[in-house]
Image (cartoon, rainbow, N blue to C red):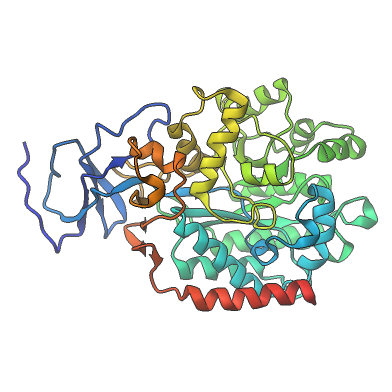
Amino acid sequence: MHTHTTDPGSRLLWLRDPLALYTGEDAGEDTTERTAGGVVVDTASGTVVELVPAGGVPAAPCAVLDAREHVVVPGLINTHHHFYQTLTRAWAPVVSVPLFPWLRDLYPVWARLRPHDLQLATTVAMAELLLSGCTTAADHHYLFPGGMEDSIDVQVEAARSLGMRAVLSRGSMSLGERDGGLPPQHTVQEAEVILADSARLVETHHERGDGARTQIALAPCSPFSVTREIMRDTAVLAGELDVRLHTHLAETIDEEDFCRERFGLRTVDYLESTGWLTDRTWLAHGIHFDDAELARLGAAGVGVAHCPTSNMRLASGICRAVELEDAGSPVGLGVDGSASNDASNLVLEARQALYVQRLRYGAEAVTPQRALGWATAGSARLLGRPDLGVLRPGAQADLAMFRLDGLRFSGAHDPLAALLLCGAERADRVMVGGRWLVEDGAITGLDVEALTAEHTAAARRLVNA
């Protein structure tokens, strides 16, 4: 048996005796009692070194943080977003319309983006996510009008400044209105430009292996905004560069109809015809699949980012998340763009997922642990990151700590369930790679008031130009 002394100067930090510790290791099993003694992280290496059993002590002397008033969970992981859309939240002309008219009205506004607008929008989106307990965020940026050719580079700089992990998807649109697509012609790019920039970004910014902070994925936007050829060529390039693939698919019936009319195929057949039916791929939304398609996606290991709030706001439908997961598809969560889910809050998204999936599958099938599993380990699987989304020795020390001391939690008995059922909105502390980025509910080193003022001014300019 180990003896234990505290060492305030140690690189080891013991988050001691939390109200609950959710490890993310098994979304269907309650592990909180076995790990109620807390977690030990190495702040120098940025990894988890030990889970302490109830009543136990760490193997080595540690600095100690009293976590008795906190629920501790792995850092939440957002697998689908459009950061730039924070500039068009709750814009009146699109508040109550479905996807296609929503896009048609917004494309001309978004085409006026400039690099500093994107820097502000990215910072706002990631800061908001961070405050909700999110430590890794995947963004899907597909707009590169004149002057915005270096958009992903702008996002890399913003993410590194905040200290969050980011998977930045080099999106693309190559099928404009002139050729039967949805986007305005001045928002699309030629295939050669898209592929060359994709390769450049991977070579310049993509980090590999455990602990990677910045990664690049390749992400043609959707069946109605890119050509079949760019889908196929992007899949080939992703294989050569060993990076992941991302796109929107099966979000609405309109999209299904478009695929039938243009390609003579349903969406999953189209996916397979372009070389995308692979475990390198994760899809945004994935709502309108039939039973046979669910089985094919699961067999191939194609992942799905469930975006419940966006799906409800645009009245797109309900993702068959439980069946996808049971078929073998990794399922994670995405808040989606802030013009279709106007809040970039991932802990609230887990609550939405819990409730909308219960509508489809019943209360017993979708527990708070399962919904948290989608927001953590499930999302990590989508991004190909086994070192994230769990708290176990060797995993990255990415975690969020929530206090349950507000009026909304008064009378709550199960602290882990209360996190979602009582509607936690904001983390008290957030750690990424052993470093605190949020303390006492505030992002260290970020002037949120000044950022908000500048971002709000940019948003007004964009819609009034």
